[in-house]
Length: 96
View 1 (tube, rainbow, N blue to C red):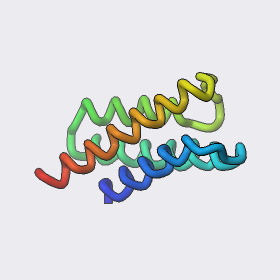
View 2: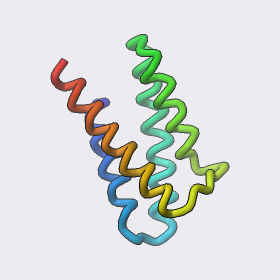
View 3: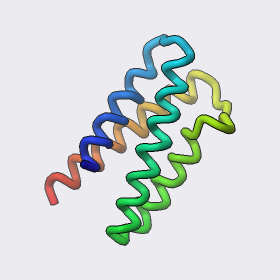
View 4: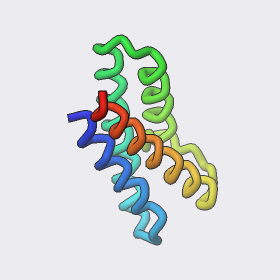
């Protein structure tokens, strides 16, 4: 299930590169926060401290309540880097 969440979040983040109505970005923030929180919980259960902290940090970064204003260009860079990291992480877990 974690791999599916990672791939889904990666697709949502890559789609942020397209010019969407503001509501889409709000939806992505909420889904990302929920997904990263779940992934952090799974990392906690598997005693993977590094992944736990990374996913918690990402959940805070993407949370929709107190918005972190990075500007469109920087957010696009963050979206791509996080999306690529999620895909890499999902593929690495499949091989193990």
